[in-house]
Length: 601
Image (tube, rainbow, N blue to C red; front, side):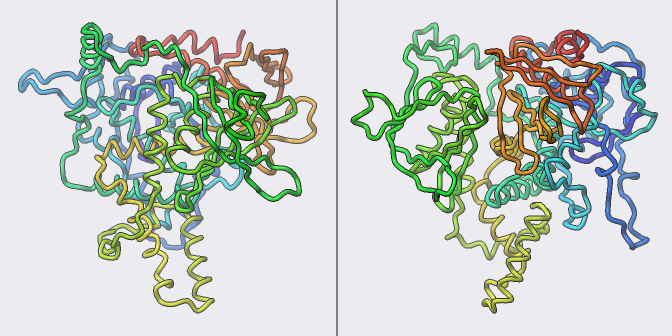
């Protein structure tokens, strides 16, 4: 038996094979819990800090964790039998009820031998009620990059068994999404997966494992409040959308349109001319002892490069500068309330990062250029089918930030039946409280001395108006998208010492790149793209990871906050996940995973 704490902090107790390698054990666990894409998750042995709580003097205060365990002792993984061949429908079509002819709930019966009942599945597919501000304040919050690096030290080795790694019966481990590359998220089949992903994102925001601005924090709070409200509603929730067309039906109708000579909305269409963007933007390049002054230029974006000229008339001549954005860092620099739409670019050069800021005039211009920069950083052009959806996603996120301050919110304050401080990080709530203390000290009027809760409630309800009509699953997906749009999304940190360096630095591992970060300032210094990696290996005697890139560039480092195998597996794991495609259905090349992550060859 093993106790697993899920991303929504729910404890599950189930039977797991301690002799199977962790990759296989996680696959079996996910089948039991009805979570698709098990390769994105893994088991984490938490450090002592994770469970550290402030001691309570109240003797009546009991730990609720012990009595709140979902016991799945009859789990099929107990027998250790191989998975039945019918676990996945090849097309993921919902299974139909033989009596009524209606589709069975698409999250209950994908797996013929799952012990989850409808009630248990609801627990995993529904959001848990918000924690009290006191409980939030007691939970472990990493304060620095080094603290965040410590959290990632406990990932288990996927190529070895639980027994080999010293895990004992009934020990508590965390089941978490390890790789931030979420493939084929589908509301029709992924109720549990989407909810657990939403919960992992929610706790990352609340515990400040990822940084966001106050404006973004309020959007996350509004979405949490909305999701909490819908989850508590008495109505039976349906995870499938009637208007949603089955993937096969959509493909058939698309084919029909194509055969009839119509224009199908297909990413496979041949685009002979790669689109370009050309417009006036403001540019700023940071230099020492200079104030931040933006200067206007005529910018032209083509392929994956950006060029700028003194004015439009000089476009046919030599540009002031031309920059290839492939492999660069693209960071939003936006304040919707202040009408500031900026893009920060960190472009890799031989001796570090070349930093520049672009300033757009309005939302539409920002969305187009931001989407183009993001795609170019991945080596894609605006001809890629993901360009238009990316523009729409950015605009949608900006609209959520666009608060309607003219609306009458006071009547809604009493409807906010949950403490608004449950939906923001303790630091954000504390900041509001210190503002209130400043107003009080300055002798401000009663209106400004509104309680912290009422102030927060008013601002959350303001942001909530933009999402109030969203269905439950769409709100969770929107929360996940907003999380993915944060500059630090998907970065896993490790404390390392690079070869030839005399100081410790932070290595950030993401789904498509490695980033060398200054441990003291948090400023990125160098970025390496996975697409440029020729090979990587470990010198097991010196515990040093060596990576070779194109153009005879190489780097080597020892890992100080975790075993070097963990970092090696992260790199190989992300490269493995990038090989997935829709036509594979649900089959995975487990041998390829171990070849890329095992570090044996």
